[in-house]
Length: 432
Image 1 (cartoon, one colour):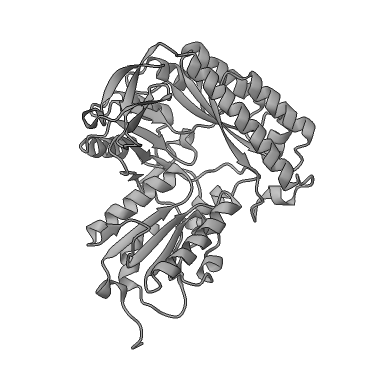
Image 2 (cartoon, rainbow, N blue to C red; image 1 turned 90 degrees about the vertical axis):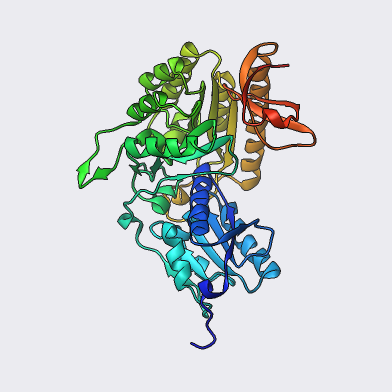
């Protein structure tokens, strides 16, 4: 059509915005590098660009709403720009997104890493183009890592999930569990090490499930324990962290290994979701709270100084006041360091949305606040236990009103007057 304009003939700037998890951030960084390799110049998201790419999450309802708000903001700032939506929301509800005024291209899970090719073909037509497929057909793995700062990088080594928790849409958005090979991960690590990065955080949707994948149609015989052993023997990166690992996949073998590791930090993030066995069963989690407590005890026995983070959901259907108190008491007694508290939100095509016992939103919010306050107490108590002790700190690059921040090996955040020569170095630091 004469009034259609081919994107690549007129544009060369792109801006990105990422919603959701660290995995999304690592993938956005990879998309950015791909487009820069195709001749695009990257802009900040609050600047005017020819193409805006929004990498979405769909874990909560707010993520969906935020995507819509971002599109409206782009329309006001740069009505002639092209808008591309990818990520989990794009895979789950491509038609819904395509109907948002101002969206030109929707890329599902199998197509987001073909973004350069899709932009070449994009024209300014009357309706958004959807490039997506059934999630069951998504089988490939695309390695990704973030490069927002040189101090720490998030390296994706696993994707997808074979679990079917009753509240979760991630298997619908990302497909079956699959992962990179250890050989490829080690090659990526060397690439990252060449950029003077000091710390890598291993990320995935179900990280402990690492090893699932196929080479030439033959299933690989690798697992997460094999991976961390190989990384520990690889020169170039001084620190590794495990982003999040399910309690039933966090074996004694892994805990013991981290305790004596040269490079893996004494820091675990272990999803709990509920301290009530009844709620855990309704959530279709693959463990009971007793196993979770056992894992925490094993970590602390091997590494008394280790930080342990917890994911927990409040307001799940059927969570009565009594069951919430079970969670509160369980967490109160547990020797952990901090929580990430999520308020349950109904998601289409999940089992939980049909469950009885809906918790009113104001009660969900109250419970969230209660657990966040408990988390703050836990963090303060954990940090106070290291007062006047020396820990190794990796200093970050941001200048925050004359101060710089860094994290100890066991994930305590510290501050110091800003010194440019200290950025991206690991120093001894006395915690005050």
